[in-house]
Length: 86
Image (cartoon, rainbow, N blue to C red; front, side, top):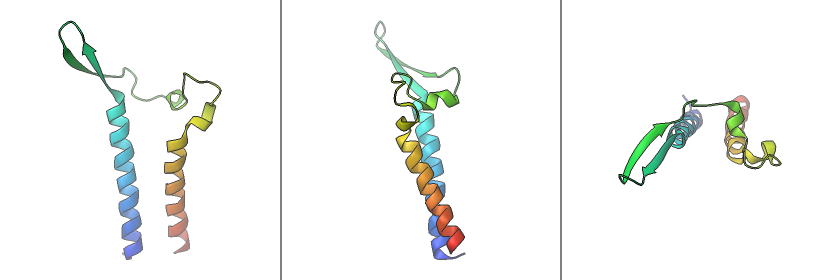
């Protein structure tokens, strides 16, 4: 395997793991119970819905609010472009 391919594969694996762990950590919510001063960890009842990608607080933004998703998709597309032209 070429060094560039190994580097690109490492980058893609890192991005996939990063996205997974960020999604997992965001889906966990820490709620502070003021009566007992405890922290309860709760999972969302529905772990992922496509409509969760769009900011529900500001409907005018729509798909423009997907800045991080667009950046990650762009990096993956650049990686595919590099692999196809190598």
